[in-house]
Amino acid sequence: MEKTLVIFKPSAMERGCVGQILARFQQKGLIISGIKMMWLDEAILREHYSHLVEKPFFPHLLKAMMASPVIVVCLAGLDVVNVVRMMTGSTNGREAQPGTIRGDFAMSNQENIIHASSTAEEAVVEIGRFFKPEEIYEWKPEYMDFIYSSL
Ligand code: UDP
Image 1 (cartoon, helix red, strand yellow):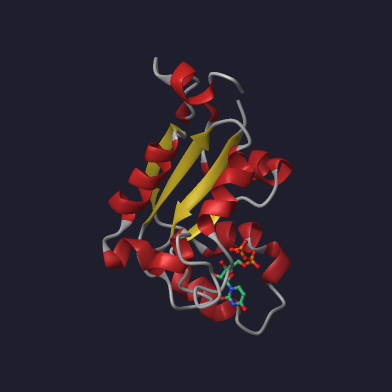
Image 2 (cartoon, rainbow, N blue to C red):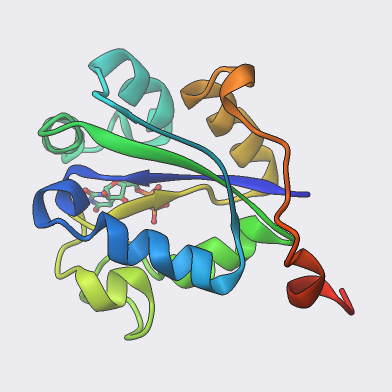
């Protein structure tokens, strides 16, 4: 089953909305395959946001992502990368559709609550960046047939 990476950013940690958002993913039928808390450092953030290092806002983004520990989650499900991106909404919270996580919880382009992998290929790399192989659990709950019965 496909997997994706979600990071609960310091904006989610500070505002205490991790539980509510994790509940949305579970309610949708996505499976938690890995979950842990960590404090990100500059090295991992430079790798993770390598496409943004030249941007003028990058130093501020670094600071924002290191403002508190984060919670990283690996979610599994059919088409999970796309499903989680749809649930996440546009980067800028002020432009994200109501009903999406950023649309419902964010008013900022930077402090936008969660990170979610953009593509299946990127997800594989990102899961490897934040988790050791033994921290990912291959399992599925018994109720899966009720969620994916007709695929
Ligand atoms: N970001 C920012 N200012 C911008 C664009 C992005 O601070 O003008 C931050 C924001 O936190 C965003 C992250 O950089 O989530 C990564 O940007 P990306 O374009 O990859 O967007 P995402 O995939 O997170 O929607």
